[in-house]
Length: 295
Image (cartoon, rainbow, N blue to C red; front, side):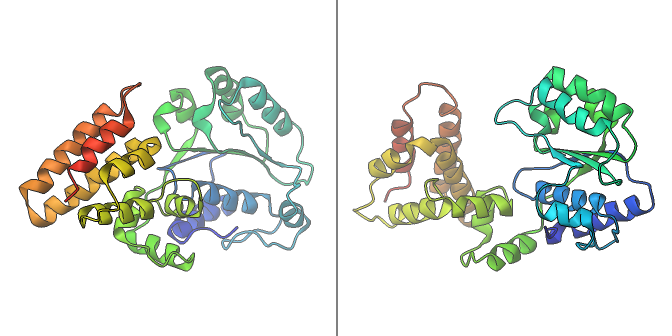
């Protein structure tokens, strides 16, 4: 799996440290969702499992690489769960690390959503983090570092991964065929390019494109696009719509310094707060908000 361009320097640094036998056995990759932490972890795992790695990554030729390419490397384990990651799952993973590596190289345990570990699961992992078996690497990933127990944090080396630059993200999206990639589109998804890619590839989910088209029609006074119609259509994504409206009105106010834009922004802030309450009529709140934008 190719490493994303904005993580090339981090990847090279980690591999160089591994080759110099200076890589920590417990790595925690943190950063916002949608920037490619999983891809970086998989790229690193591939190199750790390779019999003839170089600073460029795995050789892709050895038996270990062939097994990994086929998806059945005996010394690579991923611990995932749909909801919380329980103690039984962690113990199962630890048991796989306790013996000698079947391929005679490294053993790698990857936990993509480390923050979903229960307290018992985290405690079960502690001993392995403190005293790992030989040639063992644990790679933990999280979007929410504050949800991890301090004891886990203290035993891992933290790699804080930043958002890519706007130009890197736009180049990536355009290379993926997103012709209308723009700063506004990126901003709508927190400047995380993989979130944009995922949103645009989904058929059912509301995308910023749909929102943008609807708002443009509303702002242009299109009689066919009424606030009530959009409110009904978008009510299942009411919180996201209110946040996008807030972003839109904020940008317009910064650009034009008009009182109308400020009033819209203030209404958006209020709507975002209101929508946090359970049982609120989302369609009604959205209708009130969207009426502010209708000409």
